[in-house]
Length: 368
Image (cartoon, rainbow, N blue to C red; front, side, top):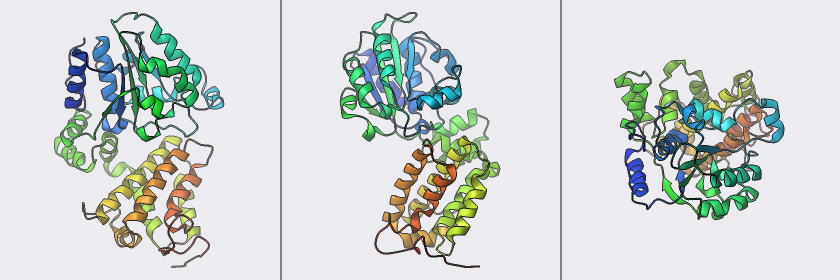
């Protein structure tokens, strides 16, 4: 095996899995539940290094090009793939190569296909080329649908000797029960502040700044990276303003739509995705402030009284809807429509309870 890495996230989880491997107690199919910001993919890739006996020093392309490593990831519809061109890597693999801590943008219509299932079965049946073992990473595993799962089940349950299959998902509840039941499940918790601070310092942040940001990031390294951009991060500030606007009962719907159009015009898909994620982050932050678990941050403090009137239950319903809005970005829906659905949610009486907190959508309230 390769020398043990010193910068693996979740050192205790990593060490526990390695001990189980060395003692012959680790299942051949392992399910890691946790997002990229929590380090789940870094953990999976470090396991691949160890099992294959290589040391790529975070040059992940060396691992993805290793003949005994296979990554299966959900693909967009065939028409979208054809537009990308044959020479482009799979979108998820492209994201992992760029930074395995980065959020992976997977549309609701993306799938791990039956063809990919057949490829996994055929590939795992072959002997290793360079290493003593073979390693399969199934990224965003909840996108494995029944036709692909049916093909893969026997291999997941009893792969060839020397084959390890690691599935990663942040939505284990969406994984097919037939797939989940065949895996040894391990939760990847949020990163601790020291780990996040160390990663930020490694990427050039000052030590004092890194520790402050790490405490704010709530265990998510992507959030920490975005926070470290400081005042230059316009998306972060604009997303906070939109949360405040969404909760202001005096705002007119027409004016909100104008604000949304102004913000989303000219944004790239990546920027839109980041913007919606920041809206989710600020909303979560506001909910914690409403519950008295932390003081409100200055960016959303103007909305605190309004948020309290809305109440915890409705705010958490909005947070669930925000996750759905994020998923809609992968569909054939304009970014403006996605941001509008998210921003207008608190005042949409069709979705909220009978006791109105905001005027219905067809009522215009002027404050100008």
